[in-house]
Image 1 (tube, rainbow, N blue to C red):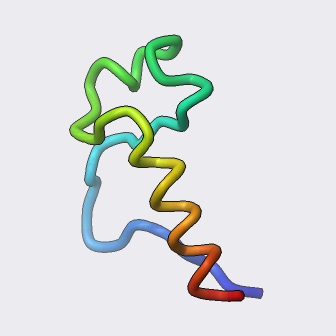
Image 2 (spheres, rainbow, N blue to C red):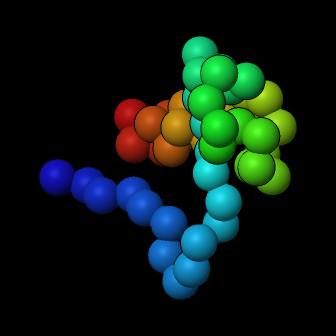
Length: 48
């Protein structure tokens, strides 16, 4: 099992594209639309 997580502090919310603009966290995030999905995709590609 591999665990990927934030470490050493809170870096704000990363909201996926489906929920962006629908949930409160998308209005207080520093990450623009699409960044959360791209980050997850990048992590998954590293482990393939």
